[in-house]
Length: 81
Image (cartoon, rainbow, N blue to C red; front, side, top):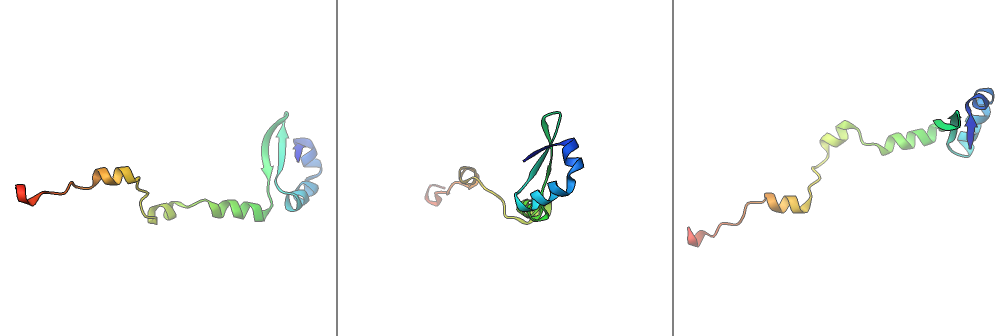
């Protein structure tokens, strides 16, 4: 549901209750989305879905198979050397 900023301020406890029971609540400013109120559960789910810098550094490299083939050394024909 969309809440104009003034309504969200005046009914903040209702906005929070609806965020917990119905999902994200959008707060608008001059008719445009300005903020979203989320339940703690929804917020934690979003945070958990995002890898951290440490996760990225510890993860194995993401190789494109074509790049990996291009970087492999060509087999050497030992008979012609």
